[in-house]
Length: 168
Image (cartoon, rainbow, N blue to C red; front, side, top):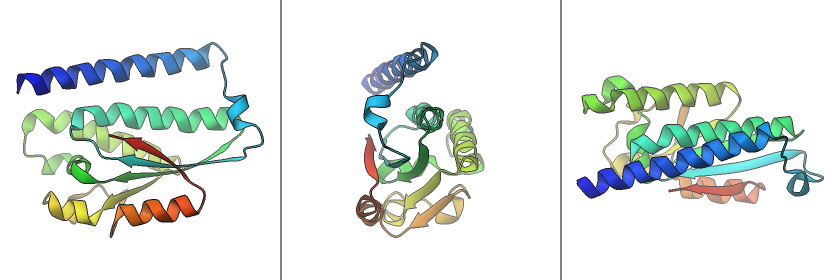
């Protein structure tokens, strides 16, 4: 338990540092023009397979920053965020949360999903994972589409030119 808590805090500190560095980079006028030369559409498949809910709001923030960063640089983002494995446990409404200490984190997740969805980001959750982790599909946030198998989604989106961004 203590090791898990230390690992969680260390991971969150690292993510926060990366978040601050990315914010500072854009504030200083840094850009990604070399990588984006000739690119008009940024197709990304974010493959989320996290084991701890506390990390998810920050990753969703960074996905939002990536979305805005592409727009600022003249590239149209086309994002799919897919939840699989234990991550499907964190995309339920706060009323479904069993641990009262986790309600605030789950609410943050729901808010981030709604915000990103309003920007046009698509969300999917793996039905295999919801079954394995005993998550009731009707409890999943309404912005998230339940699909049969996110591995199949990944294969399909890659065939359509989407790049995979693993988040584990």
